[in-house]
Image (cartoon, rainbow, N blue to C red; front, side, top):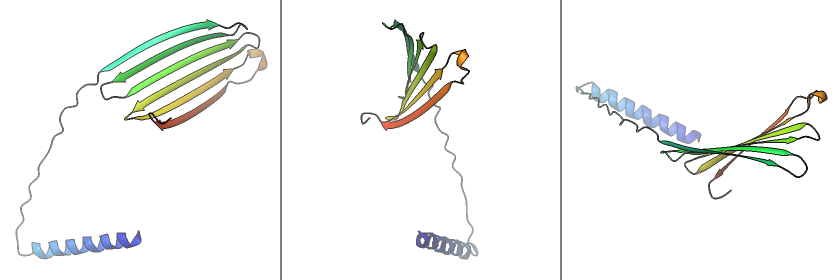
Length: 138
């Protein structure tokens, strides 16, 4: 690696020295060309949402809400939030799963929060995991 850096520095010095030697007897003309980038088309976003509720045979209750959206660049986002309450223990678990796909690479983030009844005097427990993968390889 050091050899490449030294070789690059030597080449730069040689080119700079040659340019100085050439400039002593010649005049140079410099022109500048400005290229403007085209205007970016506005993104088109489409989205959908759904909700659902369930009561399990043991009395536990679940409510789920899901949304998904995509834009004209091909990026897609899906988010699902599930709240489960456990009446016998008084605990509530909230799970939020977000998957974002951009250019064939998905990033999945899952956040789980356990909230305990007030009499336990415990702060909520929050766990977050992130997983990145190429779509189709999971």
